[in-house]
Image (cartoon, rainbow, N blue to C red; front, side):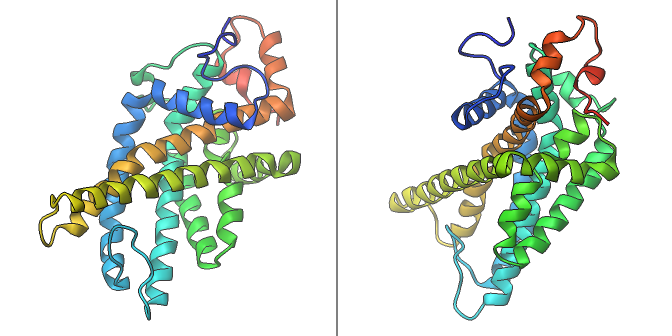
Amino acid sequence: MPDAGPTVVLPRRPLTVGELLDSAVLLLREQAVVLVPIGAALAVGEQLLLAPLRVAAHVEPPIWWYAEGQLAAYWLLLAVGAATEGLIIALLGNPAARAARAALLGRTARAGELLRPAGARWPATLLLALVAGAVMFTAALCGPAWFVGFALLGAAVPALVVDGTSLPRVLPRAVALAARGGLRAGLVRLLGYVGWWILRVGLATGLIFGLSGLDLVPAGWAVPVAMVSWAAVNTVAYPALACLDAVLHLETRMRTEGLDIRLARARPRTPDGVLLAADR
């Protein structure tokens, strides 16, 4: 049975928060050969984009903390960073959502399937990722509004790719799913982000301080080493967050829309697109 056993990526039942986090990690491990290289390319691009903004804000590695008298430049740096994170997680959400869809149906998606452009809705995904980036940029400029924006956007790409939701209806559906059950999905997404943020800060700064303590960072190389360290950590963190969005979306549908019941009653040869399409 596809929903039995301790190593099932995505069981066909509502999950606890701990099981959701575990499921996301299992999905990433299963699809690392696809998701990690894409995450690496996007994480490197992010570091290159943020480099001149860090110089303008006079921040220093490894934490890039606020420098006195540079509030405006630092605030802009934070907003752009929030935008790039939102965009990257949304782009990775496309293959992650398709991998989660396959896992829910009891199979492992092959790399070629996840990389094949046919039926992947990549143009719509790119547009949605740009919208997500713009929303996160605006929310970050407003300070605490970032938490609201991040909490509500998690289901956007999975709804587009898995549910077949039309592009104009994607954001309203994502917000509706995130808000169900007392904002459960949105809060779980925030929890996942905070957990990975703590892990990223710990690993990146620990690596940099460790290399510096061993005198392995030549003079003038602190910034490049820090950029590489952060890119390396984000290479795993961003795909993991995209996987969390994917499994959280399907779990929310099982919890609130009876998707697990629909799957149990479905005929064997029902096409995946019909089986998982959201009710319109």
